Length: 374
Ligand SMILES: Cc1cc2nc3c(=O)[nH]c(=O)nc-3n(C[C@H](O)[C@H](O)[C@H](O)COP(=O)(O)OP(=O)(O)OC[C@H]3O[C@@H](n4cnc5c(N)ncnc54)[C@H](O)[C@@H]3O)c2cc1C
Image 1 (cartoon, rainbow, N blue to C red):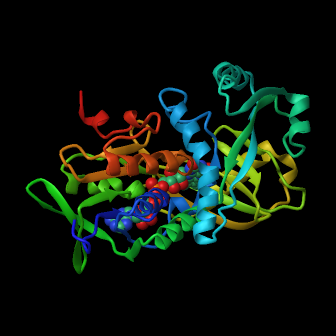
Image 2: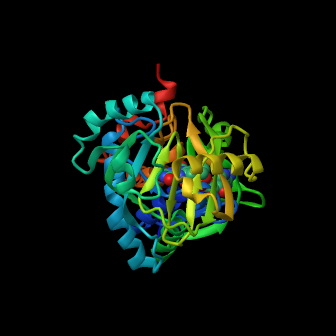
Image 3: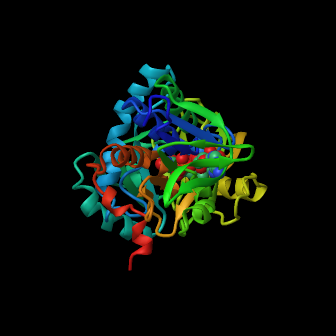
């Protein structure tokens, strides 16, 4: 590359795009990030921000090591962001309690305990129904018990994404508002991107378009199997007292965050790219919240948000080189875990771009090739 040439264009200013831009710029690459709306204005800015590495798609096999590695990388990264940008992403070590209200759930949760208790990074135990309210006094006394995980973590997602973007800019990344409409290519090589009113050239392109990744299928000449899965969250004012241990039940959650509001969610809705909040979701989240924490009956709605998870067909993230291209990379598809997995995905992408391989454990399971080969 000449001195003035752009090394990398990143398409998408969610957490995956912003963090990858930061990591590449730190290594001296000249990076431009193109975001259609504004940084962190979709899922990365409106997620719940909890980072549980012991449950979810691909966990334990094959993504337990990837998840634990991702979690452990957040603490030092948060400090690095703060030093570089001044933005505090409110990283904190947290505890979580997954409740069971029927015998089937008790059996299912206890079955997983065997391997969960062998993961050194955490302290995992079963608490019976009387102990549940000692661990978290706001939890329902009607549960049959639950799994208590100590040493999980959380961040405030918008601050986290903003911190990544501003740290990237401090390291020389140029962030522009552009909606990319295609790739520039010559002889099978990707030379840049086009957008309404112009084009930009670069030695490499990274697609970090979240749930919109499927739209790049036509550009890449192969299917990117990612779709949007809508989720909604309520932020509540609550006089009954803070919930200090995050409560989980049946895909739902509630905890009081550092902003003093009690955040509760969620929904899983297959409604395309619709990001509007709905009364139906608000009512169902409130009902599920009261099952976990019945004393919140008088909580008042302060904020209601909706956003779209990028969900791949097998629920695992997609990270790596796009097959058939030497200089086109992709990072998307993290579903419900994209804040947690953002470190594993972005450090992995940066490694692959800079040295052609990565030591991030489990990255070898995440290539697009898994959908096209065999
Ligand atoms: C309700 C909810 C709660 C969640 N809670 C958690 C949680 O507690 N923990 C956790 O780990 N994860 C959680 N997630 C998941 C997490 O938010 C996502 O997996 C993650 O934010 C995805 O990041 P991303 O950068 O891949 O995509 P996004 O944040 O969607 O960013 C993609 C960006 O690309 C831009 N873009 C798209 N197309 C173009 C284009 N053509 N040109 C330019 N820009 C483009 C978009 O405008 C967007 O800003 C939650 C998600 C939801 C919806």
